[in-house]
Length: 305
Image (cartoon, rainbow, N blue to C red):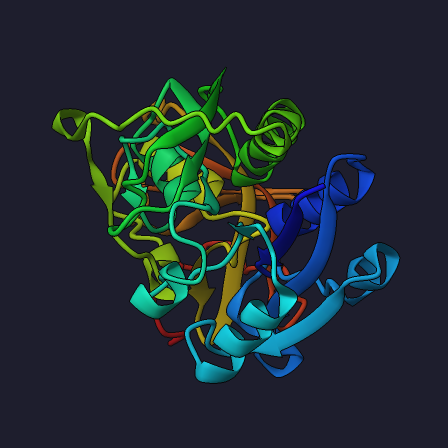
């Protein structure tokens, strides 16, 4: 029975832990995860202490998986394979040498497409019609290792980050269920990636969720969907009051409204409609820092006069 170390701190890590625990072919020896004080680094952070206890595994918290202390903890676990799933730090050479060619990772994209950061938001922003989850052997670069398995699925035209996240969770579970028994039995699938088709996704920050009301309603709605829950959300302001938009719909501009871009042209208790650079955006779910509904005729993204 092979022994495993799992490194990560988010929903996909928890799913991997649960799958390893269920497996009769594996023993989970150690979970390396994030210090609780740094939990806000990840909007989908999951505390894995309970799963470690359920597995009878040791728990090691760290801010740096490449630190000497972490490397020693992984060495002491004497594992056969290391799973790095839901961990944003790159594994440096010292870490990779702990189990050469025996470190397994997961990337939420159809590799070699969208290597890099923020693959889920970029999938929606780029209007990818089909994507995949990719289980792979970690390589020397970012997401360039040989593939173990891929699970493809469609991306809906109105996909939200939350529903795409759930699809990736389902894909990861399918691939782990399919691959764990094979790997435990000595089958180590390796399909090299074709770098001719590689694309690279840049890091996104909280600031990238800022809405530019000069954009079209369609583009703003796409941003809302791409950075919504479990991510921090698309945002604007009503004067000094921060406004986060969670759900919206683009509407055609029939020409009946004459307003500045960013101006609220209709408002009810349930929703409000904003003029954009092209079309109207109906805002259906939102929150403000103050808890107040944005003002009728307010121009969003400007200081209150």
